[in-house]
Length: 237
Length: 301
Image 1 (cartoon, each protein chain N blue to C red):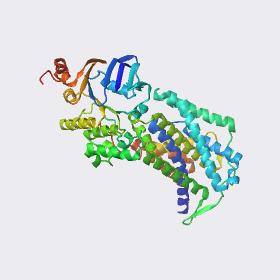
Image 2: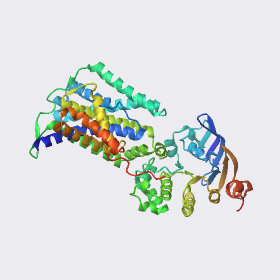
Image 3: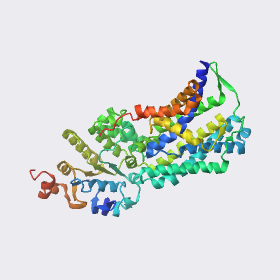
Image 4: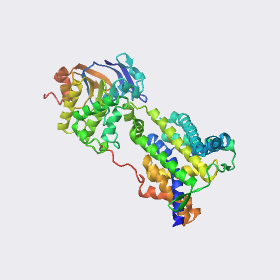
């Protein structure tokens, strides 16, 4: 169980998260919605340790994650697929994937995980010797997700996986997220594409200006008139 | 033709030395985007440590000339690596999140500190390496008689470069170093301890620089506390020539610069040696600022 309790984050003197309270149960897909600048990405960055909170706590089961450096948090089973993909462009696809397994030493099992990722995204297998920077945007996103999975995480944090992708590809990515979740990985999904995210997720949080404004089952959020108006294009659905 | 090949082998040996030093610049730049201006002085420290160990331990007498020189080189490399790690800890790590200029000033300060410390310990005059460490024989290479020390320097630097290349390309830690050079935060998200990567770079670079210092002592026989400045600048030029941040680039750039310089000195005038080397720097900055092997692919956004 991942728990954020009264989480506060400052950039310089400006507080951007004003006490976030959020829980993710094992096996869930939880989505975080909100406008640009609401603090969604900052929340994920704080979970994975790249940003340190000024107050509150992030705990995984009983372990306080916010006291650990990012590389230790990966070892505790949290993988973060960051916004903008951040793949290693001058390394090959396979080297990128191998780096995802940096915390593991079980060589035989690592190649099994890699084969699983090549099954999830067959295009990556075809391009395994290619430099990652030469992939298309969609392929890079697949690589970023695959790289995140290489550590065999318990929890996968996905930041805007659909950003800048063609609608058909978005559909593929979302279906793959479902498959990943079905294999036992808990998913925290930050998305602008609110409708697709809510259809996929079990529960959702809506963030506004550094606070949690709403929290509910995904189906209820999808039916909520306020959410429809603000995030789903005016209740047309 | 004889003259040409003699100068060529000389250039290759000096180029190997430049390449070893250039690797230290380029690796640190790759990971920290910092020019470690104290690196030339780490090279000088290697040279002086080699002298002290030679004159105090008599390794060649105890272990024989072959094993003696290998053990000596390993000791020098290990000690200079420790100095490099200490330099990172004291002069650079506290400034990791400061503006880049602060770290550059700190690097220049460290450089002055090192060279003055060497002057205070060893004196300002040239120090002379003991003779007869390596037999003064020449090796017959296809009819060309090349001094043994030159062959050994070129051979040793090539072996070290191949080992480094294999380490960076093939091992897990080497890949982690390359990843951290591309994107430190993304590397952290892979579970890489970037501080350890930086420490690793500050062990490997200075070790190679220290080895180069020992080579210069053995090759030219005399050393001075200020020599790190010129060698540092030449190696920095070599790193730029090959493409700063690029490891094979530093190797190619170093060898190339050594050869250009040796041939230029032989056929134009020895007085023009430095002008030729820095002329190369200016030329490459104008024509191809990314260096010969600079960035291969553009990042796709």
